[in-house]
Image (tube, rainbow, N blue to C red; front, side, top):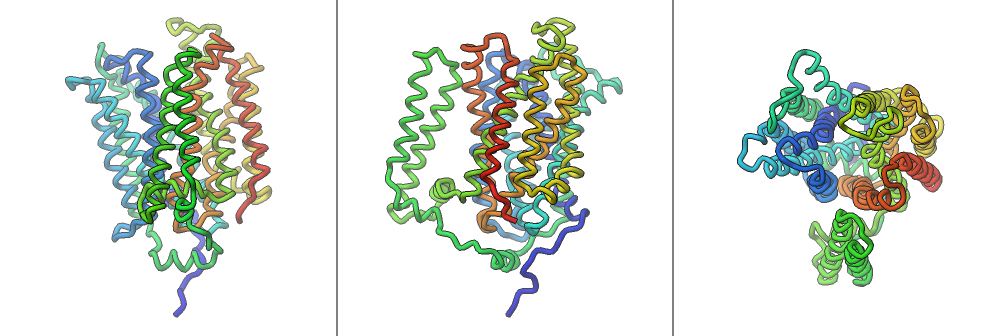
Length: 503
């Protein structure tokens, strides 16, 4: 008996649109969260100093949720499919969180309620997002991976622009952008409610218009690829406890130096994460040595320890890429106000004029990313290959960071945002296209989830360490972070020389 298909059929543009449209809704949720949660927290009583601790929910939730969802979705198959059950679960919970968030001030403990909803919202968005990354790899032949992830990136950019513009548009239509103390403005309320509807509708569209391949079809496709590799989990039984001990000692050591060196308290989180991984590794190794390796913890730890070579090399690129991105999101706005508009005082008109200009040109960056993903990346990847395309785009983004450091005309920052938008498009598309082409299909979900660790870790590292570095070396002078961004994107670009396209 032979299978009808041993290669995945090529998808039309309509098929690529349908399978990626859900990401438009997911990105609306993320941008509404990122743009408004600090405002909501402060509205319900949080101080400025409370915000970092409240915001740590976002990267920490992704770090925990994505590997678990990846592991589970690899092993799921029911009448709704393999990945689609997670799409809809995430969509329902995220839409609920978006709908309830504007009601936070009405509850007896509004700050606790808002913080809890942030955890629910971020966890739900991650539940929906992680399988979407694997979904493109599931549905497309390797020859279409670059195009598939580029279309997905275009919807990310479009969703970001929509979510950023919608509150501004409501304000210009006469909806109030101010509210009494302790209440959330109507522009934010209606944006969250409209965002919840858009998110659910976009993900629902993908669920209703796509059909996942059956396990038998996936097995036939996979048989055409040489994927016979040793199972990383089985190797856990051969490992000593030394590596787990190293992580535990490193985490404890970092925690112990915080007070003596006068470091920011957030660094305790970094130490706790490293120590926790050490403990979990020891538990996983112990289970494997006792022949109990068929469990989620041992599988995740084993797969993390046994990452394929291409994934390890891309992980380094991701680490440096996202270090610069988190610096950009934290410091670009204050830099525009301080160095291009001449004020670091949030109460001045000049500072707020700079903040408004940053919001506008950041929308330009996301719009450029959407256009570049559709028109530039597929053409470049065909000509240069996916790895070289990513290298070129990262170098362009590094020039965008340098522009912030050397220029002083705010209008020229549009050029910087165009360059950073090209890099942003490539960061969201090329590493995943390369990775999906090099991984065994049966583990695509878990490896995509584990790959997210190298998105989250640099954000946590920057959040915990950058404040101490700036306080010690460049107090009140954030412009140096732009030089840091240029340097790490340049390092990431040249690290791509070690990465080969899988096909």
